[in-house]
Length: 618
Image (cartoon, rainbow, N blue to C red; front, side, top):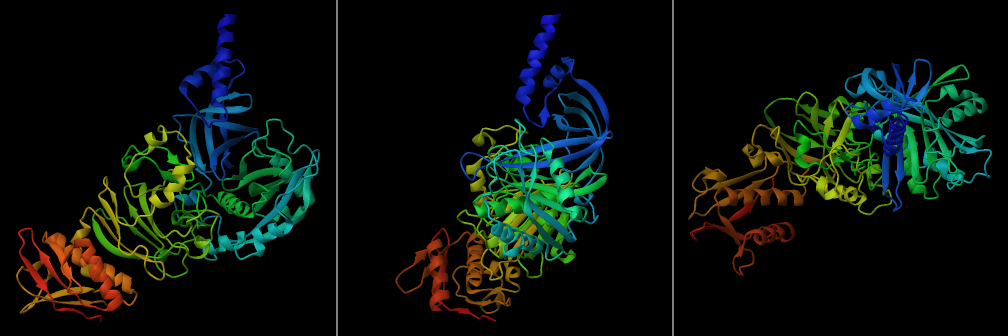
């Protein structure tokens, strides 16, 4: 009996060590937990809080993610939590009923029911907390029992990054919310010194060891006005090992409820390493504060088309949302539009939603960071709980400020897969390739890959077309990059063919009309006849390049429709074929205002020649 029990204890130790600080455990691991006499079966009700840990690997600026879950029960006991791997883990602060096993002050939950979610505005019209005037207190904190603290960032740089510069925290969120969310920052001048604050031998962060309670308690004593603040930003010294090596920052997801000194605080809290690299400090500050207002990471799809099927439980590329401050962006990029909608930062006339089972439409969309009025978000409903979210990025405002990486001036259409029950946005890419084997990962495994995260920046920009084969949704950008205001025009269809659109519509009454004895449509052109063409543009927003592209598309349409090849004699020096001809023709039109003659040739060699080409720009 003794040997059997000892064996089970040994296996339990090995398995719990293998779980480490993972958030999930298997049924086999659960069996081992039950064998241990120290494991106590418990059940009850409590508040589940979530903390995001953002860390950096050995090769800068590689980053890794970890999510910490803690539960406060009805007796105010506080436990770190792991979940049976079959449980759908809540992604926001929640009141829950639970049952499971308590072992070494860690709660292994085997059954979970959500009573209510803190951030109910994720799936409803309830107003978010990130609206109106809010106050943040920034303070440097250190361990009074250790060496004299040093901070990589200067006091002056702290002021600049929080509130005193054009690219400060205050202005970033004011710009993101279009003035709907106004942050006032107070900087505590002294270092808040706390005994043994960074002295835990297994210190991962102040949230893991709950020493952040000490920080709030000391801060309340030193700064009696703490009750009037909504957020606290703690800056840690760079020489006291207050967080594990590589941790950049850690933050509450939303606000945390804290009872100290007979007071109730409801605060969004984050801790930051005090980098000498001020750009990294600023990016981390903007990122961690977004967690405080309820925003999760922007991840990317690595499963190809499989994510669009009903069984899409494939893991995401962490930080792969490479065009947002919540991913690995190359600029101080705006929060994505799906999250802006959840925060009620979009006006009603800035979002359009397509719910019909069958439709076709053409719509203009403005960049996320633009101050120009118009649609900033296009949502196409797939089913009862998933959507495709479309946004436009252009190097305007904060989206045009480098985060330190090259190629930060992104310009193009982005598409997110949105699951309203998971409260997450997953950035799609233009390919349908399943990359999990390439990355050597399996389903349900959290994954980070620095190389593929950087590549996702370009892969995600939809410049030609995107097709959802499950719901038969087609998204075709027409002018993704060339409009002066950064806007784009998109064809969207569901269960219809976008090719049914007459290309004349694409430029607000662009027409290419063919004439013989009477006006004929493009489809009625016949071989062996000469035609005069008239091109009309009635959209004042079109540039010469845009007009050029439209005519090019129209000519290509003629070629594809009638299975003809195009030949042009631009300078009376012979006929040139196909693509080079199109380019030469359009180049002549734009730069020299020449009107070259061209002909269409079928596969049998018959041709008709058009010499009288007249452009009427009306």
